Amino acid sequence: MKDVGVYVFEILFPFAILT
Image (cartoon, rainbow, N blue to C red; front, side, top):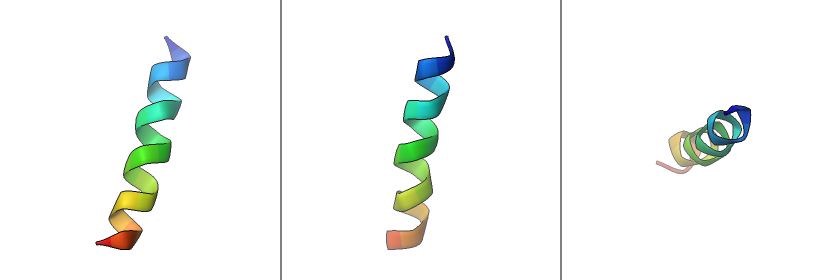
């Protein structure tokens, strides 16, 4: 289940920069 971790990371990473 490594894909799920990367998916969340890629979504949270940019989200924290946008906000």
